[in-house]
Image 1 (cartoon, helix red, strand yellow):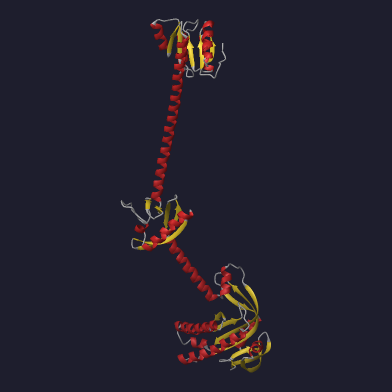
Image 2 (cartoon, rainbow, N blue to C red):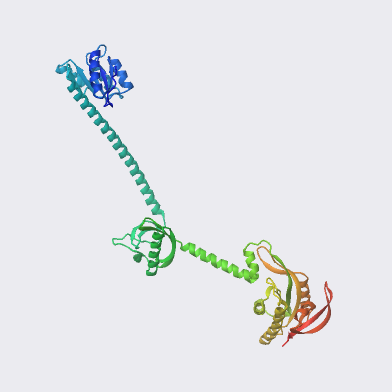
Amino acid sequence: MTEAPEQSSLGNVLLVDDTPNNLRVLSTLLSKKGYEVRSVISGEMALRAAKASPPDLVLLDINMPRMNGYEVCQALKADETTRDIPVIFISALSEVLDKVKAFAAGGVDYITKPFQFAEVLVRVENQLNLRNLQRMLEEQNEQLIKEVSDRQVAETALQASETELRALFAAMSDTIAVFDRDGTCLKIAPTRSTVHWPASTTVQTIDDLFPPEQATQHRDCIQQVLAQRTAQTVEYFLQVNGADRWFSANVSPLSDTAVIWVARDVTESKRAQQALRYQQERSEHLLLNILPEPIARRLKDEESTIADSFDNVTVIFADLVNFTEFSTQISSTELVEVLNTIFSEFDYVAARHGLEKIKTIGDAYMAVAGLPTPRSDHANAVARMALDLLDFIKEFSTQTGENFSLRIGINSGSVVAGVIGVSKFGYDLWGDTVNVASRMESQGTPGKIQVTANTYDLLKTDYEFEERGEVEVKGKGRMKTYWLLKQKS
């Protein structure tokens, strides 16, 4: 029988007695004092009730039919669910042997009937307090065991992590250090860096590790990183084993007062970049020797097809007369040297007057004015070049004692210009204007400059001419041509 408590429960008590009157008296007493009470009249019922809902305390009579109190207590202690429940025996048996048997069965206290209410309350309260303390101790022990286990797991993980980090540092070739805002070195990681900054018994600073001018720059960098809370990259070089080595350092904030310095040896990368830059510059230089600068720039920009039409240009062909016969009288080396001397001067004259050299064909030289950048004085520029070439070849003949002469042809008009070739580029011209200029040269006279009527019309105001008359031009029929003599004074 269960009595409703008058106040919040102080604990759950299971009463076991085959005498209903005893149960009623104890239940009333405990309920009034605030305990939650359940009452059963046999040992079997007590075991079922305790297992179904374990109480905080059992008050157990000894003399009961079928299953006495000793047997009930032993059964409770044998079950993992109920073995920690404190059992107080309450019995009319007062012999010492009875009490010894009770404690041997697992009881924690023994009350002799008839009992005093005050004694029962004190003993119940005492055992419940002990039970609560036991539970608290068990919980604390469990928590302590868990904390110890967690700490062991954490320590194991930390040790593994430290081992991994040490292995990682040992395999790294970067220089890793920690500096405070004043440049004091707080820590240097043990890596395979080519810069060996050994651990020192004295405090090291930026000034100990870098040359003076670098130390000042690096200290400023550290202070900027801490002030702005953003990483910076700095490049510098140091002497390592007597050789200059380049480094790139990433400087990142580690805390409000310290930075981590991770520097990598980039010497080989620097050398590769320098070699690449040299090759690029060399390639660009070679490209500019072959192509006009605007065309070379378009080719670098990966323009797939470069072809342009120009309406107003002037083309010049200059041929060394009888050079083939001369070449049979000298060695191949001397031949190349002579041609190189002559055509190098032609290149210089062309550049001075703003012409684009197109190509050399054997002992002939081809150039043009008015492309790739259009210009209104294209004919004038070609005329000045042609006259300068005649002057040069006369002087060269005098210096060498050889009878060199030039046959020059000029024509003005429209052309198509573009780049041909894939592995070997060439900038060339096409069109009737080019063909006629070539005919003006091949059908000219050594030592003279033959021009078409188109070119004559562009130059007649500023230059003196001699009319040659009409000549038969292959593919064009008869054309009126002129000899360019000199510039008017």
